[in-house]
Length: 488
Image (cartoon, rainbow, N blue to C red; front, side, top):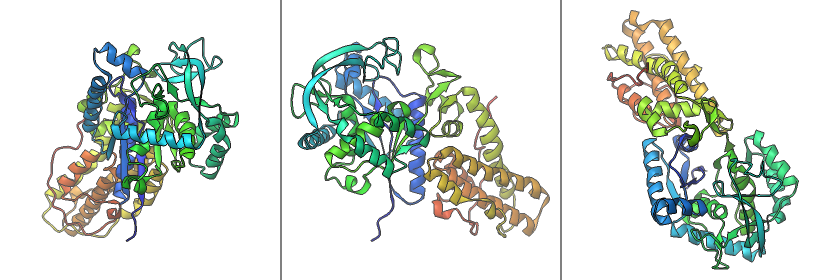
């Protein structure tokens, strides 16, 4: 029995100090699209997301809410799951760092790293940003504040256990050299490479003042630093070390993360894995940041975008489409409600919706035989779309698909089927209906609900990538509602 190609993609696990916003939605929708695409290809696919629930931020937020940390995070987790359901996210696994199985995995991994001689006891003093859960040196601070978020930091001085990150400098550089795709996109690789070449310092991995976290297995007075705990979710969700899913899906094909956490995933995470004797992931892809109408998204600015509200107002698939079409994966982008509306009206309504509506309107009134010679098949390059998706170029893939939609609309204009009859009309309808069926398959990872609606109107079953070829049309056309509603 030949094993299927496999694809394992992960989002970061999201921190539970607040409900999800458009930034979380973007990462998760992008991962969902990539997972759905690989399912279209017939690959054995596992898509993981989840929540990062430990640490000082959660303790503080829970105390303010008058709840225990577990009660507090349970409520936030429910909100994440509600939002992912509303955005039609097809995850295969949802990991919580408060899961006992995760905590057991972390303890086992730490014991292996210690046995390898890579953990030692020491004393830590440094500046700590609670919101970012990141340590900084005096030189890294900007005006005495966190260089990442600009908020206050506090000086910590306490006993700690350290991981010998410095030991892995050469092995990390070899990893990057042997696997040119590990640091992705290439525009972000230079920063990581330069920092690693400048020299790595050992990192503190435990705290004694925080109790809400994974107990350090070597010293019960200590709690594991939340970032180290969180990174192991990618293997704990698969049941490392003996779980069948771990054997089938590891190493991860893509860790999809925001650029602000690239260092943790591209440097600390593979070093921990190498120490524990575990193969590193194949790729860490760090995407850009969203602004809203030109400004960084913050509650204090009043410009944080609620993804569910956008989906409810403009349609879920219009929102998903806009996220992936506005910002090429890897770059920064600006999200605005006006931009969403423009794409909805000018691309989804005017191009995809118009093509479907014109096709089914004419086909529903035709009582002849829908058959003919393929004329629109040569204009479609499915291989190109697949190559773009393999490169995680979701923006380019959408461009290619919508270029074909424009070609099909031009075909309607050129052929003027409303003036045709008999076999000549049957030939035009055959080409349009087959083109629409294939388009439905190609857009299904991006807009799964719209794909279902298209199939319902042309009488087609859901297809896979192998079905993206012209074949005899055997569906029953039933004209339905417009695919998208134009917004004023």
